[in-house]
Length: 212
Ligand SMILES: C[S@@+](CC[C@H](N)C(=O)[O-])C[C@H]1O[C@@H](n2cnc3c(N)ncnc32)[C@H](O)[C@@H]1O
Image (cartoon, rainbow, N blue to C red; front, side, top):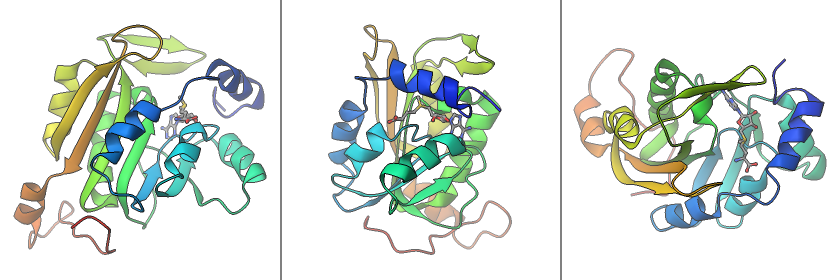
């Protein structure tokens, strides 16, 4: 059991995060991701961003903490929710966009890379990613949770292999320039190279999405 799984510490997080949300990221995303697109949120926490995303998208919330998923379901019994780990993303479903806000910084570099590969398979053709990170070049640990800060250069390298970068923007969450978001699109070049390729890396969209 970790920080986000235990009721006491998860509620501490909810109190700490009060007043913060991902509106800025969602506004930037909505310039590219059309209304009505299917969006998977990884690490939905109490669902602050999921509620905002739900105003224009068909949303699926997910978290690896059952506490948060159960808490949200109490308020919205009909919500589409999954228990998912950000690295494994153990689902057969596909989405037009995958979103997270200050979640993937809990992943080591290898885990981030695996997650981005898996996300590539979970996205529909031409699908988008929007993820935010704490900016910096250090690792911290709090309550047994690791925080991997990342630089623009590191993020560029991590995403560019599988995605076309649309924007990589430094912004303020708590202090000036303490955060970065990455908006990217599943690489069409890579997709066309992979079609017809056999083996574990070969993939094709099986569910139609909104994105042409
Ligand atoms: C900062 S909160 C996200 C808050 C959310 N954006 C909101 O609108 O309330 C981070 C969340 O990431 C989740 N998380 C951390 N590591 C995860 C992982 N490996 N897979 C899935 N979720 C994870 C935590 O359980 C927590 O709910």
